[in-house]
Structures are given as structure tokens and as C-alpha cells.
Image 1 (tube, rainbow, N blue to C red):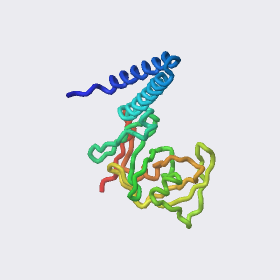
Image 2: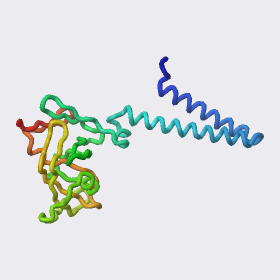
Image 3: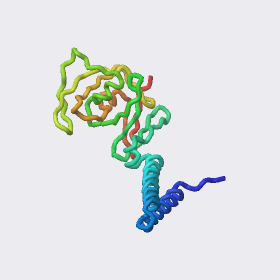
Image 4: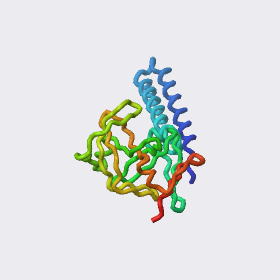
Length: 205
């Protein structure tokens, strides 16, 4: 037996909820308890329908703003030796990479000189600042910030792998986005943007 489409169920739920709330208003003067019960049931039904609708948007629209809000980003694909990353609806290229054995979402920024991790991101992958390297001043959209340098033992996604990659650890008040910069991209054989996709080609061997 085939179930009803979710859209049909949502419409039915909203219709019943509105009717229940309206009936509650109409009879509350004569039958207060029943009227209040119907109104509350109607409100709960409308709330449930709204939550179901938001969940459906996040699940089905992978490249929509709702998908981004719920942490769902377009997945990369591997074509031969190339790693292909679709453009996300926020206008950026995102990857979920394995950093020091832990998974982390990173934005690929061809305008960034260094790969950089937020304070939380660095803690999540166990990246510690190198005490022998002096802090660096970085210019960001939020102004100049002081960052510390560290070494990522291994960063992997798709066919791309980098070892002993220098990364900047941003302060707590800095940007909260984890970024892959040109110090990784420059290690590749090539990279290009075509048809809304970022194509990364590793060096052979």
C-alpha cells in the first residue's frame, strides 16, 4: 500500500488544525473547556505542520538556503583522479575533510594564503600552536587579528591529501569558518572552476 505524499499529509494536518482552532473560538463562550481544548489542539497541529515543512525543505533542497542552515552541503565527487566540489548556495565551495583523523567542514578559499582553523575547529582536530613560531597578524573581514601557527599532520578529502600542512589557528574572537587556502592548493597539479564546480587535480604519485 502506497502512503500519501508528505505534501498531502501536511495540507490535511493544517486544514484540520485550522478547523479545530476555529471551532474552539466559536464554542468557547458556551463550552469553555471544550473550546480551549480544540483551540490548543489546533495550535499544536499547526506547529507540527510547520516543523514537518521545515524538515522537508532541509532534506530535499540540498543546495537551498534551508539546507545550508541545517548543515547540509553539496557532496564532492571523484572523477578519475579529480576531486569535484559543487558550488554551495552560499556561493562557496565546501568540503567535509578528515583532519588529523577527525571530520571537519572547511571552505575552500582561493583568496586565502593559508589554511586556517577556528579555535573550536583546531581543538576538535587536536591542532596546537607551535610555541617556536611567533604570532602572525592577519587581515580579515572583521579587521586585523592575531593568529598562531600550527602543523596539521594529515588533511584528506576525495583524492586530495596533504601532510604536515601549515595552518593558522584563529582566536576565539576571530572568524569561525575553517578555510583551506592556497598553501594547500599550490601543492596540486592544477585546480579550476568550471560550470559551478571546483575541480582539484592532485599531483601523480
